[in-house]
Length: 639
Image (cartoon, rainbow, N blue to C red; front, side):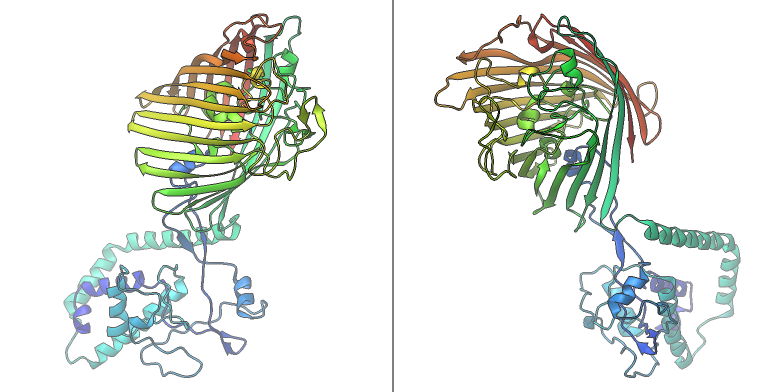
């Protein structure tokens, strides 16, 4: 058979087959410090990640941020560590001469025996795509061997040394077959043809060799400087100027302020399909328990506790300057852990997630194109349906511990749900009061007691141009709040009822985006939050409603630029019952409205600048307040 392999151009194909099947070289032996040592050639690997987004919902929808069904293997350059693993002095040069054992080599006690059957290789299965080719090389030609532990490691990358050793072993075997043949194997015509082909493809072969050398050098450089074989680091830096006018009557306009928010996200995968997200952030927004130092407080539009307001920007944390679990202060630009979440698949259509610092938007995909705290809308109102923000669901400070699932019913339909506790790290509630009726641990204590939420979202895509999200959430709060941070009435949701009154919330909402064309989309949402006193001694209820509609533009005036124009009604009390007041004392009830426009200029792949403004009519549902305008110039750096 061998004489026909070299009698035609298919002989060259045989050599290519050897090169293609040589990720593990034939029978290497190492001479280190006068001893033959079996070397572990396990490589490092890196995970390929094609995209980064601020919320992990899109990452999960694309089968996880760093998930990839295949992993590319790179040869390891950390030879000192390999020497230590082998029990070899790290001062010894690892790369000693490697001699491939041919079929004619005599076995000895200090060399590995030739594998005579592919069945002797424990990690090679008949279902492997290269099984038959490997079987031929091992059993017919006897020029490919395994490792001392009877493994082949066929998915491992190959070095140039290993290629040379394997090729040499096979060529020696071929020479033996040629020597024992009875006839001429190569004719002059074949040699002439090969010489002619070599001359014709000299330039291509030279170019290919140069490319291989360049790839090898680049691979070595990447491996030497990689951050981690399992972890990818990305970040976002927001620097913005914010100015405002209007607000409560008789209040002066605040000065223009310069604020920042920095986030570093470490995304780690252990299997290639799971993700551990660790997020660190620092910001210089102020607020604290009473809102002191915040723009909203200076406008006179903030709640007296926790500075909730409709004048809040999209990239501002819900509870700036305070740890809401204990009402203790957090200094500006201090580093905090805002995200700690693990996401892992357990079945073909089922993914689970759990973490001690998580947000609803991590698991629930944002349907509206206006969502993107550093890239799209500039207000907190426009980004997400209020139902997702209930109970601190998008606090921006890692408020909730949560666990849940993602069930992909079909490519166009999935169901997601979670249970969250905002006080899981507290063993017991404090007996001390920060304000009358409110403990210094106002959210309660324990994983299954105190404030908590059960939330779910059904995402439906009936066509490529239409996305629909339906939300429901049931919450229990130890104090009288909504936990959205969207309006000042978020605190004291049951107006006229004590701040320490526990409440239950049932929230429903829907979000829709309709892409009229690849560059223009209509989007909007509607939401209703039903609040009831959870105390037997209090009979009170309130209903809040909100809606939004807008137009989103992609590649407006220039590729990569986006813009948005939207209008809607912030959360507003539409109905009350029992002892709850429809209009707080001193307010002149009026329906509030929100008008916003922004334009994002993509300066480069990593830098964008977004000028924009939003106008509040009847801010906080009180016509006594002046029409308020908030202008923002936001610069976002991503890496």
